Length: 88
Image 1 (cartoon, rainbow, N blue to C red):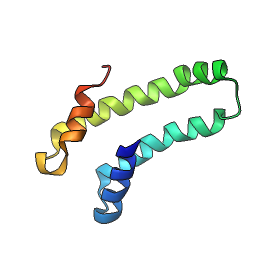
Image 2 (tube, rainbow, N blue to C red):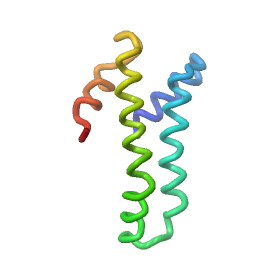
Image 3 (cartoon, rainbow, N blue to C red):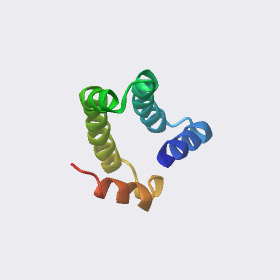
């Protein structure tokens, strides 16, 4: 989630709509985690698969398509490396 800190820094410095969108999407995942925090590990896993899985898949697709639209200067090697290591 270090990428979130980078997105937050970028958004605060530039008011970037792309960084804000990334933060919003990642915030959905944090919201799910907040709701399931006190549940058993088995139930958390089930809920993650059912609720967070689709959100994460959508985030991955959005991030991948967004990276192709951004200039190489606005993205880091770390961002592109992270995407190349994805499960999709």
